[in-house]
Length: 256
Image (tube, rainbow, N blue to C red; front, top):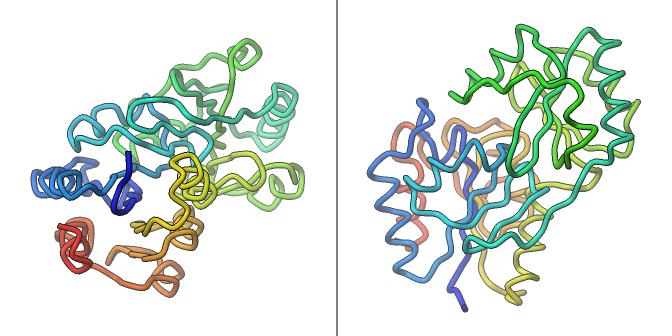
């Protein structure tokens, strides 16, 4: 199918309000996008098990989750990459040296190596369920993304794992994917998969892992609540996620 444009939406602080909900106004805007032959795509650090209710509420069937490590278009899985078991083993050893823990993600399950105070705080931060503790499950399951639970040691992990990319998106945890993987690479990959190399793209975000997303899109929309670095990169700064920012931006660009 040919589309008029692609619209990529971060979730937390962007498409979602402060209660991690899709408002009726946003749901209606997404429906209008689809009617206008514009494909809405969720671009998030979350995994699919955490966003099924969001996709249903928004009426969205395409996503680039786990910071681009897994892509689904129109309900069909079209791409995924994995973090090797040996790297997962090294990560478990590394986080324990730092007296921290790690969470493992794939497209079906989320589980933790152990429990600490940040396990609860990180998932409460995005109003998500706390995953179970299953220390050995990574040895028999595919892993697409990791989440380090802790407030420090960022430099240590970057130095110890040059083959990985680290995104700290909240005070309690760090997203971890393979080196070079980002929401931006997902934009490029989706355009290639759809065979639409020149299609206009719109990126909406608010945080550090949205820098690559906005860089890869033609129109770069930062929420009013976005980081100053993201606002500096943006071609348009809209209102906050709690003040109609998504609808305001879509109307600004005549997408709805």
